[in-house]
Amino acid sequence: MLVVRMRKAGSKKRPFFRVVVTDSRAARDSSFVEIVGHYNPRTKPALVTIDRERIDHWVGKGAQLSDTVRTLLARHLTPASAEASAGKPAVADASKPAAEPTSAASAS
Image (cartoon, rainbow, N blue to C red):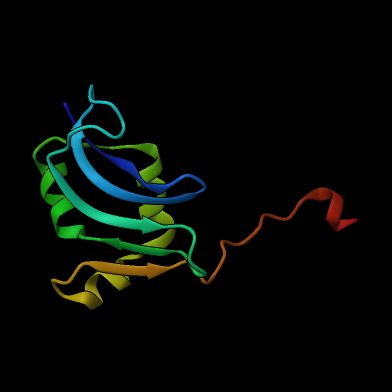
């Protein structure tokens, strides 16, 4: 079965990830079918470049998204930014942090 997941690149303590389509049985950094994007968490804001069209293509062929890639797409790539690119790879930054949930302790 094919899966869309992250492949670690970069040196020690300097992670950089490629979003790849690979066989689910393959090791994390071994062979892959296609690179469909990049994620650099070290930049401020984090840089996410993903080709949504290619991901949709592979998901249509039966590939599964890993939990991490699914979360990455949900947090950094909104449908509005994917439509605005019109055929170009989607690029998003993490300059706006996600809203923090309010707790009962802070309310009192």
